[in-house]
Length: 253
Length: 253
Image (cartoon, rainbow over all chains, first blue to last red; front, side):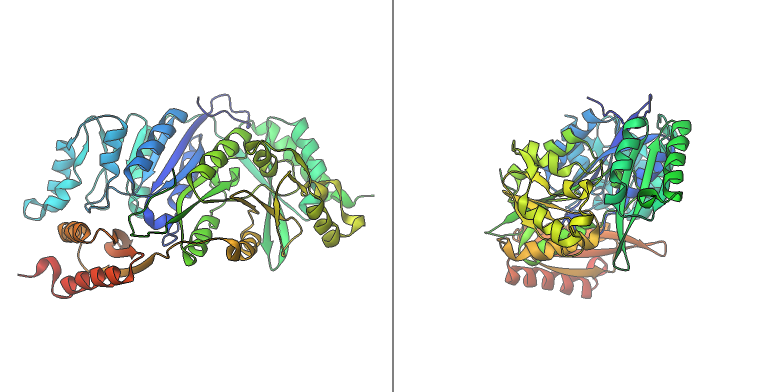
């Protein structure tokens, strides 16, 4: 079942990110790829519905890929496509799709052109090993290309390389309705505006209203974020909220 | 089935983090809670095996909680326990455990003490609504407490509050073997040391060897990270690697 929506998008397209790597799970590395992908997809009307971080373990990678690729229109993986022994993503994707894992001649030619024959070591040739039926995702930063297989996009883990791959992928995706958002800073504690927000949410089901507290200088602040594919409903709901807050909100007598 | 290990921990304890919130999936907010939890758990010998980010949607929260709590010794959720309509975590946890969802008198007393009777609005009282059989996780930063139900710890999403809750939780957890790590910067490209690393990994299966490229000033650098519960094996493998690199690594003639 594809993801549904509460943001009034009639053409709702969802995606998942699978971050592959022990280094994220150990806390050694802060993942920033998911957020970058979320923001880029949002630009073209694709909504992230799941992020999963899994270790460099075959069973976990395969099950995440197979679960996510049926649940979402698109899946993006990052990490594990380099030349070392711990780079097992490509082989796992082949297994997930029940495809042969073999040298992709296009990728091989790309690597040959990038490194030159004298530097094309066995380890580098390993980066041309892919499932049988893929399209190459070019890597203009370093040599190793990513690939696309059905609705799964297999990308590098190094942020700059992943970002360049996303640049290449983005124009090829079919987006849906763009979800617009408006952020309204709120000078009152969440609990004081909770019932007003709940009513506003009930009255405007086409707009998803989120309340996000944050701590600054020891004090809780709140941002209200309204999101909808319908700009008119969005503007109207935001305007009701702002008028309420400007008129004293919960303190109005 | 509980997670297994490749780091030679005979007493391997694993955990999962479930980040709950549309704001992470939209890219509006960068999640940093997972990494904090990973690092704190690592200190006491608990290894993160999964991170999942799910939207504020009942079915997704319930299935993630139920899947993760059987797969791992501990599960930590962040987000969605505030007073507003979009805070649905506590109610979802009750459903996941098939328990009644009712006012927790201990939590209620805490909120009463924190806010005072005149300020204990309906919205705030909502933060005392919890599954039937929980233990309270105190919140010394703001009013709303978290709770523990079986092996699931339900925490706030605001980082400072979540961190304070982790401080309170940590001494109550039963950790396993601590995984020690050593990071060795590598002056050669990954592909040039790949076969050496693969051999080293084969020879020392008790040590998990990861190779992590990064881009700095347009150049790819590499860190080799060795991890093991066995400090002797770890030191020995790291020493073999360092000797190899110091002696010219792949360029040695």
